[in-house]
Image 1 (cartoon, rainbow, N blue to C red):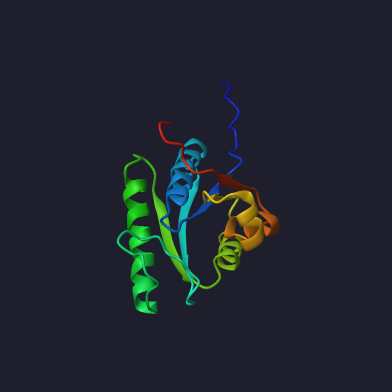
Image 2: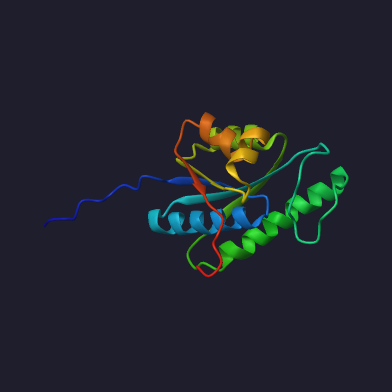
Length: 158
């Protein structure tokens, strides 16, 4: 009696961070596909910052809001992410929101959960603007000990 060798997935635990933006939603969809292919656990993370410079792209929010509104927006972002995950049969995910610096919290949580892969969206900003302002994805990719997949924004018509 012979059995086929079991192939072990490269990724057992995938962390995807979202802020509700179009780029983050594209990254979420990519993470869902990877989790399905690898039969990996998926964790969807949203980090909200308690300062005036944070931007949460929750539906219906356009102005900087107070802390309570930011927490509500963060939960809204995760609710929208859950809707997208639920569209894919056989995929389940854990949904987490944290407070703090986005890059720091993504890295900390990835370490705590033993993530094998971090998936992030890339904003549509040009490279020069990103270099001057810095970005969460740039910080995470440069500091993360595990592989980090940066997903470009979706192109119309694809």
